[in-house]
Image (cartoon, rainbow over all chains, first blue to last red; front, side, top):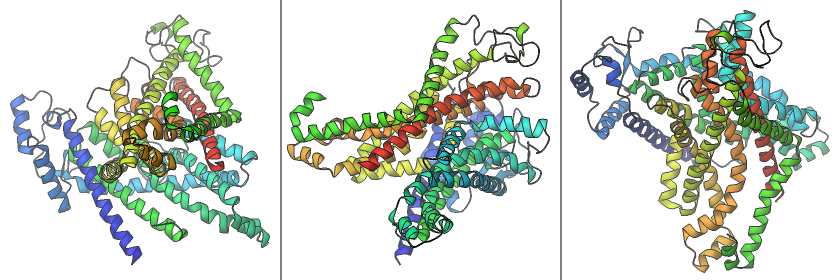
Length: 326
Length: 306
């Protein structure tokens, strides 16, 4: 019962957060200068046409009315239609006049759903890479914080944090893709295209994992139950993997919850550089094109993911360590 | 500060003195670590270079020289010159100078933004933790909402339309980065609120604001400030990312992001234009991160021991 209560409470809180996020991004988009209608009808269109189209699209109503309309749609599972992207997949920009109230503009929900699997694939692969880098270094560093593994962990983490992701991306493209021709770099035509962006993201994530691992493992190895396990004569391997790591997993899971939004930020930049057709790519293009419904849709989706992942993280922490309070 | 303290009595004075020395203890412990010293030395050298070299150099970071286009760095290729240790770019501008000037802007934006984040975030966090009730509710839900939108989406949304100048960049980055500070400051303030000296001050009749600003803040903020050093590096990367997306400081002013972004076109023939600013930035950031990490470690050590 306690568990269920927690879940309901968190989900309710989650809805409040998503609601606030949508309000925040909605007002922000409309308060900040930059008229999407101007971009839609083209720079040469006379002002009265701009006004006409804007009124037809409902962009001249008070913000609160627009928001109400949007939320009403959202409650029915409708994120609205993109201003820029027709269903055919071509991007209509520039001077060409596209009537955005037409029915053949792509729905934001579909646009997002199309790209989510690709972004998830990238995020998943990069998490695996990050763990492959971070676990050996982090565990070694946590076990011997004052020896050379500790120094190595400290150095890698400081170095990796300091490498700008877009620069690393360019260097990797230059080396692995242009010079050596090992991996494809731009676009997406199969799994091989995930590897380079995933490496870049992994380098971005790894330092946080290393730091959390070294710090929490270091603390745990000092604690009484580890001493006791040694006294009981358990082999070192068993102590580290069976007892210490299990306890270090809680801060690691929490880290994922906290770092998620910067992970999403990293995905965005990396996708943009590698021309990887995921959510981040869509975001950058939508922002540049002032595609309000798509930006709102993405913001709401990411905040929903954020809320959801954080609930999962708490549940995982609880199942690993029952002492964690829900 | 000293005379207000004298007015409260010996007890508070004592706790004050311990806290004050904690800040110094943290600095001292950090200073003893090799990482901090390496970071500090590199950082000071870079700082001096970026302050002095552009002023005394015969070249200018923004002046084009078509005769000296695409000169490679020292000892590489055939046409290198002593005058351009890192080579020149597609318009014959000296790369070293461009990097150094870029570093100036990057550092300036990093430090100012973190200061802004710190002030706004800690201010609201302290308020939230100290006042409690609906202040707390409102501020914390706002941080939740803002934390759930990645900072970069907020930043590019705003900078995508408003003209990206240095003040706007600082404002946007600062305003999208405050929530974490608010969280940390709030939890510290909640812990502080229950302490003896705060209750003592309440009994003496000090108001919320007075306690908050004169007594609690000096206890809570320094430890947070030390860790904020790490954020300077984060913001500098952020600024570079914005520049790379074309939303940072606008050309011809050199900034790491824009230099690298422009250099992509010449990647194959003139790889150094994209590489050297990246190395430069990475070295600067490593030095800051080394200092920040050492400070953080020192803080944890001292708080763990206390």
